[in-house]
Length: 80
Image 1 (spheres, rainbow, N blue to C red):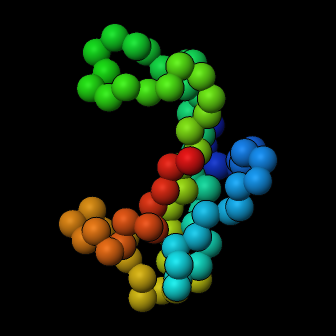
Image 2: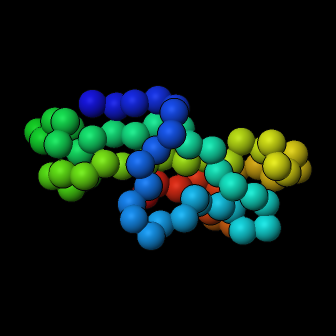
C-alpha cells in the first residue's frame, strides 16, 4: 500500500531530511514493503518496514534544482 503526502512516521532518532546548504525536503509518499509484489522486481526490497520518499521542491531555495544527471544534486532526493 502506498500513501501520497501527509505526515510520515519517521523512525525513532531520525531527523527530517535536508539537502545541506539548501533546506528541508518535502515528504512525497510512503510505501509499505510488505505490500510490494515479490515476483518480477528488478531490485530486492525489504520484506517489511516502510519506504519514505522525500524531494527538494525549491520553496526554500529557488535556485536549487535536483537533476538525475548531476550527482552533486542527488542529496535533494532521499529515501529512508
